[in-house]
Image 1 (cartoon, helix red, strand yellow):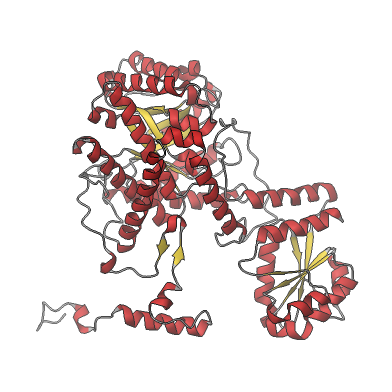
Image 2 (cartoon, rainbow, N blue to C red):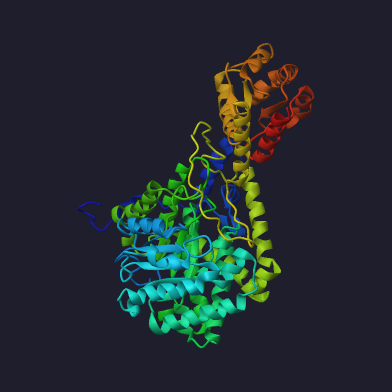
Length: 627
């Protein structure tokens, strides 16, 4: 901008770039990297990423990908926020989970949390938590008129709710000013346990609680629409959303049949979703959830004032790892940030050691301080819908909403949520989704830092007091690290029995420039299975490899070098290793045209990016354990 033309923007001096220009630049990069000779839209498509639910993430989004106007924060369809002010006034509700079975210890952790930044408590009561009669001791010293209490009482939700309401009344604070959620979720309980013997009675009991809350404590919600059981069974984002809609609709039917008005029935529901380290997917999921529920509310005749979805986001247990659990702090930070950006009303950040047992005081402090940093230092809550207007986020929100709606319609067409759980339709769908994801995890297309990528075998194990066993019998609970955890446990057993971990000798061939990349790849791969790597001395050749292998103490070996060096040395070195007693010889790289020659020389398998790492590692451990 100059004095002569003060109105001229800086961008006017540069020519506009179009999509075709960008695609030509992409073509050049792909051609040089040897990935593909594709041109135009095909070149752009080569950089796309496929997600679950049939969603494809493109490398570039422009104004052409924008969706229709989505309204304003606090107004239907509530994509931008459930309230006009979003969380900008007081921030979101910092809600921490407590799973102690001892009321005294539970009380200590509850008070410590509330004194250090937590604004509401989430208590496991009954089976797997404090007994109902221990609620009073658990909440001793808690100002119930200031801190909301949320219950997760499973089949004991009715007596737990009655006890909590009694404590509210006994505290002297007006029940009409109390806040929280009684956590009644009969359909979620059915998903967890597979037991529907008392479902009708539980639904009726939940409806009675909702009627009482409507009349006496409008700030307390009686029912939780908990989508965590479906996420924890391996469900995708759209499946989690679709099931939550079907559950919410089932509860609306139950409540209105019991005599509640549709607006009052809507106000009795709180929705709970998982927040993962997939930042944009979590943001889009929470935004899509509000949009979808607004559509349900509109069809049901709910007034705009009562149709905003109340959301509780919880950091995913599926993403938490048992090895190198410190990395979980990073995962939960991204998940907590995503939940806040996505507009959740309440956020629970699980302690980084939650997968190992009872979290210790340090882990609880880090969990609550993660949210304090996001709120108080990063000022994340001060902006309403920070992701709003992003062409990528808006497009992802729309695609996710459409996929979830189609799944919701499928459930409704099958008779609703209860019928779909009883028939196994939901369990089957989630199992198929998890099977596909398991393959991606096994092939490391979905990497797990500290587990399937960059494992640290010398990391001392972290031990925690065992946590109460959660209720089960219904949908399974899965974790991303399951397959690798089994491999690492086998390595631990080998260490305990023999005093050393199983080893693989990395036979580095040729100059450093030729073998470094594949040595690093192979080390990363084998250590993911708890197999220690030995690569000294390096390099080796057909004459020296036998002696080096014997000194390594390993029983299996892996050749590591460039394709050119393999052509000159692989066959001879593989034969020498087999003669030296190697039980199995791997080669790092795809075999190509030399497969038969190398297999004949002694190469048993080939390891490369995208191979089934779990199968490779499992078979390697099998060989060493048998020997």
